Length: 156
Image 1 (tube, rainbow, N blue to C red):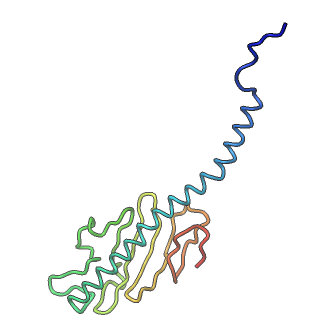
Image 2: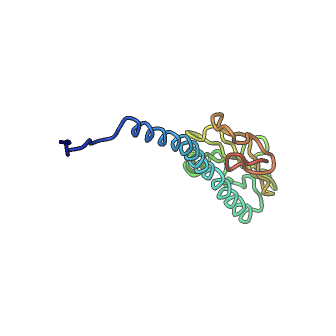
């Protein structure tokens, strides 16, 4: 007479197949997720520059200059509190060479934390550039003088 209880549980081969499937899915999903998160960091920098550019244009409309006007300083000036120039992981400033003049400016967003090494710029003519990307972000174009690099594999 045969035992009616039967076997319960999984065989070793069934468990190994499941582990292999999970490994293949993880090998595909983890790099895609990392790139997705990195794109989120980049948005902080590009949004920061767009916001600060609008602030600079408002300043120009009020003062007819991008430079310091009497006691008024442009929004990107180093004397403005860093909290007003920080957007997520990026700090926006007017770098010293080419600091705001009466008719020109260049804004620079420098990443910190997980975006450390990312550098974006924009000027009064809306010329956008990528001056650097974090060293660990393989597949991201490191520099571009004509646009912002905002995703892996994007060319200049």
